[in-house]
Amino acid sequence: MEENKEKTIKVYIMGKEHQVPEGLTIMKAIEYAGYKLVRGAGCRAGFCGACATVYRKANEYKLRVALACQTLAEDGMYLTEIPFVPANKAKYELEKIKPSPNIILQYYPEVARCVACNTCTKSCPQDLKVMDYIQAMKRGDIARAAELSFDCVQCGLCAARCPAEIVHYHAAQLARRLYGKYLAKPSPNLEKRIKEIEEGKYDEEIKRLKSMGLEEMKKRYMEQQKNAEKEEA
Amino acid sequence: MDIPYFPGCSLKSNTRYFEDSAREFFAELGINLVELPEWNCCGTVYSLTTDDIMRHIASVRNLVHAQELGKKLGTNKLMTLCAMCYNTLAQVNALARSRPDDLKTANEFIDDLPDYEAQVEVVHALSFLNENVSFEKVAKLAKRKLNGLRVAPYYGCLLVRPEHVKIDDREKPALMPKLFGLLGATVVDFPYSVECCGSYHTVNMKDVVVEKTRTIIGSARENGADAIVLSCPLCEFNLDERQKDVRMKYPGFERMPVFYFTELLALAMGKKINMGAHYVSPENVLKKYGLV
Image (tube, rainbow over all chains, first blue to last red):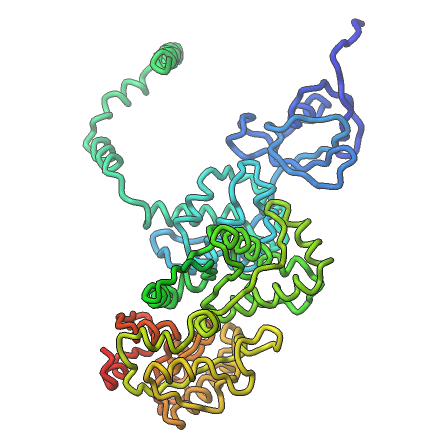
């Protein structure tokens, strides 16, 4: 057998020692060691928020969290993946509720338990000001909560770490829905486009697209990508 | 003059007219309330488990924000309007000053902000007016008299207890009586001015508050008051909104309007107040005294 010249590091996955090549993400390190991720893996590009992970570095007391597909494994790390973050999700009918100052507290009353420790902000892989949007909810500022939470990928790490048991990401989703429905300025372009769609402007193209073969569709897609790249350049 | 200012959650949501009236009033004095650029809930209630430092972190964070803004504005003061925010911030501040080890623990935990140096002075707007402006000056700048409006100042607990953060006499508070007397109101003394309003019992033991409100408003009425003036959004809710529930239990109960102190100050400066924000409309009382 040929000698493996690749430099390896030692990691502990769910307590068991493994040697993995240097430079892998936590997710790839876990897979390299032979584990199959059924849950806790998604887009593998930092967008979907499915791969919340919790780890410790060698000789460090801090429990750290991150997205497994975005964080490199280091020598001596203790690793595991969180397949799912249990979190209560309130039921509401957006049509029937109004963006009143206490509406979020009504559906997510634990928001009022915030002690401003800022652990949520420190745990956010998106670098959002999570505590600040929770505080905005407390003072009834739905627009600010929506704005500060806009880039949330719903990984749930904030909720997993919160000492006050708040489910930040679900509460923030309510804030954004209320903002979108009731508070955001109406967009004339959106209304124009919806009208065009309703009037059947794109019906013909959609019909053509639906009847297109797979090869033709692939060709069109590649052409479109090339054109887009050209335009960018 | 710029003064760092902590609004608190209630003043930004259910009781905006408290802040609005304050801003209008202070603008007339040439005082600009500079809201802390970042702030969080004061902590709501000062935690009596003093060694559970996590329960004081919210206040300490705010004190750090006040310290940093104060350095820019050249002051160590942080002003509040809400009696509850005042009480919580002032008590945590006192804790920070008296227990350096606990402050160190808090500072080490809050590793995303500068350390709190325990130099900020938390002041309530009433004591700020008394000590840094003078009530006489406020009276001199007033655009109109309060025409003998018979008003009963209500303190509740948070401005007079505990001893080390009180802004006024615990048994017989004098700041509001003096201020509104100078502004031309007829100040009504009544035995329940430092009685508790029932506080958070309003959530799950409503009847406690119904009885308290009936006693407090009833006593102010017996002593000749036409209105209550106060400084706490929770007292305001209990004494104003809960009059609806008092009426349901005691149909003969006579309603009385409740003002924030800043509303009467804004009125004295010739400003209009937001009548619609009150549960018990103050319109008839203000008409009676020619104030609208």
